[in-house]
Image 1: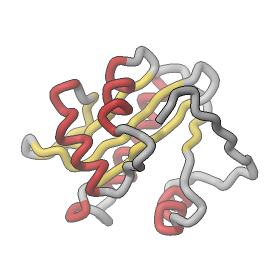
Image 2: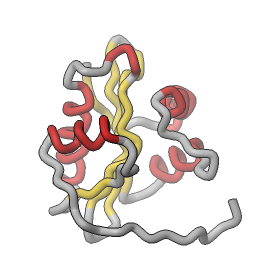
Image 3: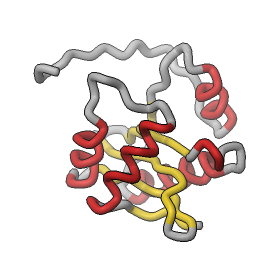
Length: 138
């Protein structure tokens, strides 16, 4: 298995994985998120592949100040084998190589299993409230 930067050719498999993993939301078009990341100069989607098959993904990016992680997903039938941890290590390495000194991510309050995963790989809770505003009609 290897983690590598994905390309436009991987869109269908990636969006399918994100959907299977329950990461998509009606107000975010996952295909647009994929394309925006792939074509961005400060972002990438890393994929874990084995035998030519997509097993997991993580989207990484930098806002010039901090690094961000999104769309960490591992196929349902391959979970609990350390693959999510492997993807997070790859994400942190990508960010470090791009000059990032701190990484952040967002998890919904009600998602206890995911919060537990991130705590297990060394992430800590910050008392920060995230505010947002839509700049385009949805």
